[in-house]
Length: 184
Length: 184
Image (cartoon, rainbow over all chains, first blue to last red):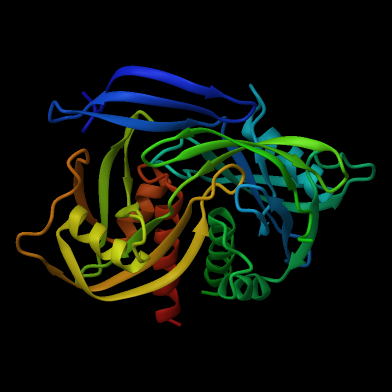
């Protein structure tokens, strides 16, 4: 048995949407008692730490209905069914920024909200960027504005809360660490 | 009008649980077309980067039903209604680890999954820890195991995917950056 496993007694799928689904499970706890778990299933996503040749970080600003506001994030998007994460990464980079990349490195994959959702985000670093002529634009229901900022500007944006998205905060730290390691 | 605002045409709350609720909104996009948004409302949460006096990071392993497995995370928990995040932080630290802290600093707040959820996580650093006698234990449906690891061990756990949770990956980077800044 897995550590502290919660055994499923019943699963009730209450909603199946285009992107997420919701289920409420009755579970048996390690102590034999029962509880309910409210769970969101998500197809997974990628995000891309994209550095231009002049060492700028590419950010996108977009409206997020869940937050009722626009926020600044690194390029990101959902996995399509059966799609490899690196393919999603290149697609989203092209669609949201118009850039292609000659180098794409997987850095880490992390769960964003393990308390209630199974969304796993694969984080990539894209380098050796080039502008794609006739690049595919964003999805028809997606509107984004591009920003290219220095690492210092990105850090300032974290401090003044222009950036407050987990993957983007991670990206800013990642670049600062990379910079400091290069200089030691 | 906010940039790229998506105006709500109708909101349909399809589920209201103990922790999350689900709504599907019909929205008007900036180009006048309409789309649907599947949205999760969440009360928000805190997480705590807790360093012991001998510079170890406190981690908790717990089963996450959403992932059908146990994972290793920094201590974290949901906000109770009307509760200040710093109060939640101290409470979760006590309940999950048995530690109190004499120093609690807010580092950053970030959205974990802005594509579909409004969960905002407030990240704190806890220092000057002390063991609380008769500490409150975890919630009755919560089972956790404590680990205290060095920064190097935590980094190793990221590399071998024992840690793959966004807030915990952020915490490991945070501590490495703090360490490097101290030495420059």
